[in-house]
Amino acid sequence: MQSRFDLQRENACFLSSTNSAIHTAVIIYFTETEPDEQEFFANALAEHDVRFAPQLEDVGEDAEILSLFIYSKVTAEFLAAHPRVKLVATRSTGAEHIDLKACRARGVIVSYIPFFGDTTVAEHTFALILALSRRLREVMLAPKNGRFSYEATRGFELYGKTLGIIGMGRIGERVADLAHAFKMRVLAYDVEQSAVTAQNLGFEFVPLDKLLADSDVISLHATLSAATYHILNRETLAKCRRGVLVVNTARGSLLDTHALREALDSGQVGGAGLDVLQDERVMRQSASRIITADIVQHLRSDAVATEERDADRLRELRELVLSDDLLSRSNVVFTPHVAFNSIEATQRMRRATLENISGFVAGTPANVLP
Image 1 (cartoon, rainbow, N blue to C red):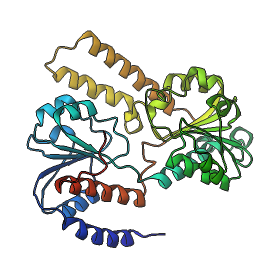
Image 2 (image 1 turned 180 degrees about the vertical axis):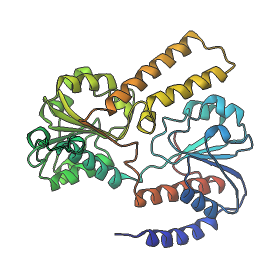
Image 3 (image 1 turned 90 degrees about the vertical axis):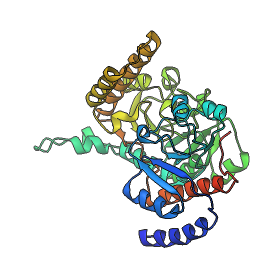
C-alpha cells in the first residue's frame, strides 16, 4: 500500500515537470478546498495568481480560471458577473452543477476529471452493501441495557446472492469484479453492452425488468441523463424482489426519493445505502438549519419571487424534509458524498485538475466537456 509520504514524493516529481509547461500567469480561483489542497495547488501553480475562495460568492470579478467541486453551482448569472472567466475546471467526473449551455454561449471551456475514483467508489459501494446486509446501523443502535436481540439484528451472507448493477461503466465493472470475491452472481443493465467485457468479468447483461426481479442487491452506477433520471421509481421498485437492498453511489437523481420512502415503509425495499441524494445538504447538516438559512437568504434578497420560483422553492423544501426523514431510518445507511474520498483517488483528482489547467494555459485544453 502506498503511504502518504510515497504519494507526496510522486507529487513533487509530477509538479516539477508540470510547472515547466506553464508560461503565462493568470488569475485562478479555487473553491471548496481544504488546507492540504490549497498547499498542493499553491505550490503547483506558483507562477500564477492563485486564490482560494470559501464559496462561489467570494470569487472576484477578475477570475480568469475557476476550479470548483460539486457544490458550487456555475450559472448564467455567475458567468455574466465574471466575464473574464475562460475556463471552469471542475474537480469531478460529473458536471451537473455547471450550466454547460451558458458556458458554450460565452465561449467558456469546461474541463472535468474522466476517471479518478473507480476502485475507491467500488470499494465504498461494498462498504455500504456490507453495512446493510449485516444491519450495522441497527446493531449500533440496539439497546445496551440487557435486552439485546440477535434475532432482531440478524443479517445475511452475500455468498450466493445476486447483485444487479445498473450502469456497467468503469466503476460498475470494478464492483462486478469485487462481487466475485463474495461468490455473488452478477447481472448488469446498460444501454451499451460489451459481450467481451461480460465474458471476461463473468457477469450477464439482462433487460432491466429481469435485473429488478432477480437481484437481492441493486447498485446504481449509471450516468445521469433523461433516460436514467429516476430509473428506480415507484413502478420499477415494485418489480423488485421484496426486501431488496438498494445502493446508490452514483447520482442522487437516479433514485426517486419519494418512491424509496414508500418502498421502505412497505418492506418492498429492505434497506438503502446512500452516498448521494437529490438534495445532499441534509447529509451534512440538519434540515431545520438549512431551511432557516434559506429563509434568511430569501428575506435579504431584493428580487421579487415569481410564482414559478415559489413553486421551485416548495419542491425543494419537500425534497429536503423527505430526505431528512429518509436518513433517520435505522435500515438506511448513508455517507455524505464521500465514496470518492481516498488518499489515492484525491491525489489522482488533483493531478488531473493540474493537467487540465496547465493544458488550457498552454493552449492545449484537455478533458473538455462538449
